[in-house]
Every structure is written in C-alpha cells, then in structure tokens.
Length: 299
Image (cartoon, rainbow, N blue to C red):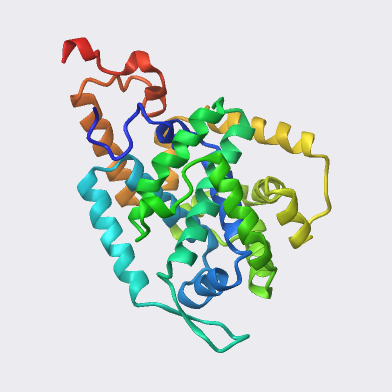
C-alpha cells in the first residue's frame, strides 16, 4: 500500500485526480457562500474580495496534500490550518454575536459543501462511479475532515447521510450580500500572480464560471437567481466536454496552476510511488488503472 494519505486504490484518487475538480471547487465555494456565518467568516478573515481564485488555489493545494502527500505532510498542514482557525472570529452584524471560525458546525458545512461538489460534479462530468463507490468516497473523506478539526463520526459518510445533512441545513441558508458578491467575483475573478500567464484567455473564464454556477443544485440556483436558467441537459453536455478537454492536458501543464509547494509535493509523490512499484508512465492520472499498480504477489 502506498504511503500517500489516499492511495491509488482509493475512490478519492479517482475523483481528485480528475480535472473536473476545478469546476467542483468553484461550485463548492458558491455553495459554501449560502451559509451566512461561514460566508462572513471568509469575508472578514481573508482577502477573498481581491483574490477569489487564490482562495480556490489554496483549497486545491490543501486537497492535494491530504490526498497525495505523506501522512506527516498532511498532519503538519492540518495543525497549521487548525492553529489559524483557532485564533479567528466572525462577527454576525445581524445579532452582534461573535462566532469561532473553528466552530464544528461551520467546519462541517464547509467540508460537506466541498466534498459533495467534487463528487457530484465528477459523476455528472462523466466519471463512472457506482453509488457504492460514491459512498466509499464520502467515507474516505471523513479522514480529510479530521485535518481541519472534525471528528470522523460526525461527518456524513454516505450519499444518504449527505442528502440528509443538506436537507437539515437548507432552512439555515440565505443569500446575503456577501454571498451574492461572491458569485459575481467567481464569474469574473482576479487572477493571482502565478496565473497571470492565463490573462489572455481570461474572457474564456466567463463560460467556465457560468458552468460552475449551473452545476449547483436547483434549489441553490433558485436562491441565487444570478443567471437565467438554461436546460440542464445542455449543462451536462458542457460539463462532459470540459472534462474531456481538460483531461487531455499533460500533467506538467496542468501542474502550472498550483503553488510551488504543491508542485514539489506532487513530484515527491510521483517519485515515492514509482519507488513502490507503481507505473508512472502516464503520470498520476494513469494510476487509475489497476494494471499500473504493483503486483501484490511480487511483494
């Protein structure tokens, strides 16, 4: 078994190595923004207004480490994240009440909005996963939730549990001015410094951002009402086309989207997996194929 947090044999590997994750990540931010306290926490404690893509990129980096990093790397990152969250507070302007950023209820909402988005978008984009595999993915993500301070037993670990969680949460959700602004930022974001080379293609981001919005659940789109509705079969077709196009990008090109620390971590993962007998001839994506795993009989 590989020393990565989530080995190639996991469903997490199948989902997180997929390029549909970029849509899932933005969709997750849009969904997270519907929780008024969680959204105000982002608004009051980060530079999200100036750098929404940077926020997405940092989330991608976190997901990368707790997927492909070593246990030690994930533990160190988790401690750092928990230490930061422990010191931050959120002021609710409606009540004047102060909330902790590391409130388990807020952490759970952020986690569920994120991982459910990764899973639902990947499946809709064409990644073939059975319901049993989807349940296994959510169960595996319970471990990821511990890095931000949650307890595994408190986190939905199946499709049914996740559906029940969202049904329970919906009465608490609302479109605050911050949430509406967040969606507009994500439809036309400011690129971080290391991604300025993409500026020439920035107009192409508008259909990408719209695709993220249209991938939201119908109830979330009704709440926002930011864009006019279009037929969902057309959205599904566009999602599948996006995934097909993105999955053709060489890994070296795709890795340019990550911060340097994450690039280094991914390269270390490749070297570690190769040393353990995995065939990296087609990169990390190629390890979806069990034929590229080490032969257990040879161990």
